Image (cartoon, rainbow, N blue to C red):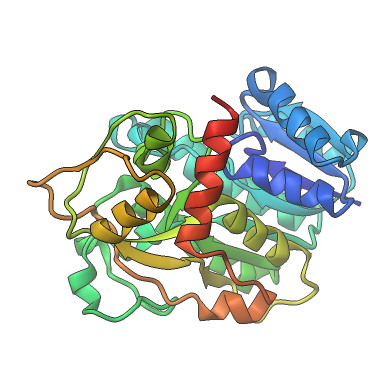
Length: 320
């Protein structure tokens, strides 16, 4: 039995693959950029002394439904972790193309779950489904039962994630599929490439190599953060757990404001030059998630923001 990881060479996807092969699970990795990033992932697998022969690779554009079907026909797939998604500027600048990837592509995965009787599908939704305004919920941490409606929606990306969640619930109820999805907050760590929130690496990554960093929010801003390896671990544990009590899980780890962010980085890099945008008071994201549901479900507590920052700085310095 194999796991299929779509988008398996991406920022989160590559970490998911590593967690699977660490466990000795045969994994089929699909990505649209196989040639570009395959060797990088194989090196990471070798570095952790896992067995590279557990991996197989397939180039896949998730909108290519014929090739998607071939992967399921030619392999005995037990579970799927779907991370093939168009993010950031493509959603705002080219919503038609983004819809082909994010809506048609994700729905095609749902169809494969039904047709090939897949044991479990896990995918990453997003905290952006809650909209752009923490004031909508008051000062409390947002729970999985909260819903903001479209009036509070800032991101086309978030609207697409909402539709993915609604479709998932439809397949669960209509077909009895076992599907779970997470709502990651700001996922930070080393290895982001040209995303809408490169600041989620740069805030500590640039100071780590002696460069100043300019952040697009004020010191008053609050965001909920989770380290990328922990985000991946959550997805994997949801995929391998025999039974789940819910379909939807918040995954946020810790909320920090600008002052806390700066002081944390300066614990490791005292001379870090971090500059904040004075005019933009807040990022269009919620401040805080209640993540007790997933902690209880999978028996895993993400590392603290400080521990994640230390890992990020170490990774950046090791690779530069």
